[in-house]
Length: 184
Image 1: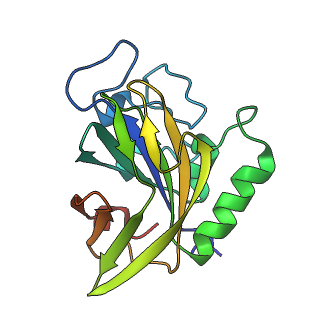
Image 2 (image 1 turned 90 degrees about the horizontal axis):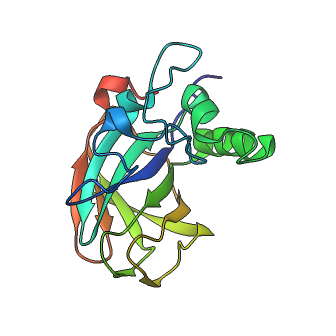
Image 3 (image 1 turned 90 degrees about the vertical axis):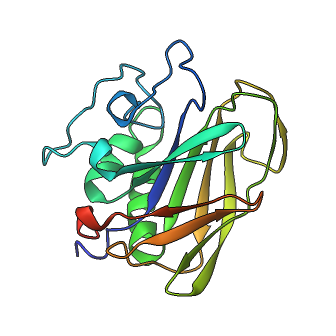
């Protein structure tokens, strides 16, 4: 059952160059939910884990994104009520058991021509994604300071115990490794 409800990812924005007022600059300061309390203090889950344990960062032109593994524990923090209906949290947990899902969140530090085309490469296999818009998560211009929220649903589940590359259509790629989370 735990394996069924395990893997997905979330992307949460962190400023690229300088700290903007109220914006995080490290994993310890990142808001702990998509709704974002903005308090900056890591909030432990029922099992005492924090999102920081499941977080890694990647810089793209004009925006820095962080990647957070979503599982049964982290979904409680990432999709809280009333920002999201309970069905959203349960759907994300269920979907993460079937395929790799990334939640994307970012705030551009300059005007940005954004693309929603991302893929993952692991063990020589490239896995494509389908984007789903929540807020400003669409191909095209995004003004400086406008938050982007969306979901990438990948066509296959990956093995989190092995490193993988996340590629962005705009030519950037970042190797990520969540091996220390034991694939949860």
